[in-house]
Amino acid sequence: MALGAFVTLMHLFWSVLVASGIGQAWVDFMLAMHMVSVPIVIGPFNALMAAELLLVTFICGYVMGWLFALVWNFFAQRKCKCMWC
Image (tube, rainbow, N blue to C red; front, side, top):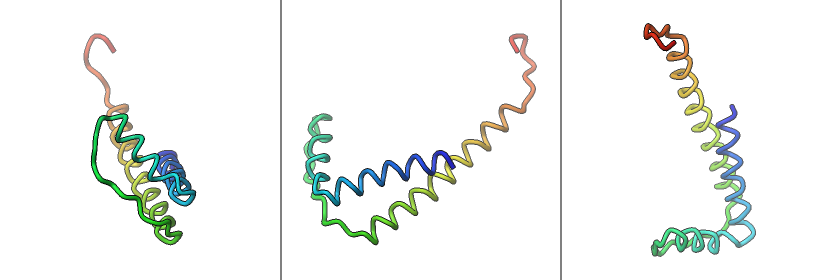
């Protein structure tokens, strides 16, 4: 849940930037900081697409967090047989 919420908040921030007209300036700034020059044009804000973006990022973040927890718990439950544990 936490990872899903985190990635959703990041994309909500991005949607607010696009809706406010700052998205293009932000992308230009970020690319310039990385010394990259790629012609990227930010399109107009679309509320339905923004809602879909938030839903998809939450689902993907939730699944990735679940998989991370699954792997973490698998290794945390293993009993180490080395002399340092």
